[in-house]
Length: 72
Image (cartoon, rainbow, N blue to C red; front, side):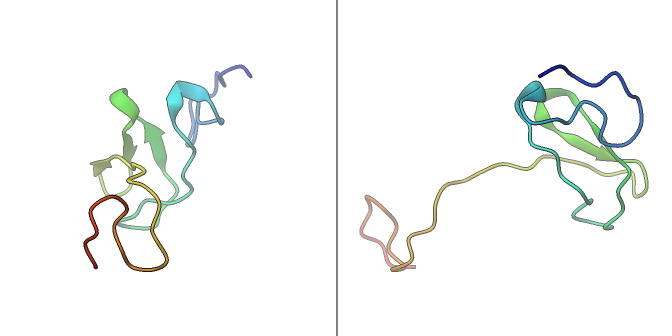
């Protein structure tokens, strides 16, 4: 898959591009004016916030953290 050469919102955000998945809305203002930043981050040009989205792990449906035995 090739990276997009567009310069508008969501440019270069195809699956596999720079290791990031596209997001549709800013988590702070819900606008769609998102642009990729260095190191996998995003910037919203509407509210001028910069942020990153990360995957922390899978949730155990039984409420016990895997490997620790702790109940949440």
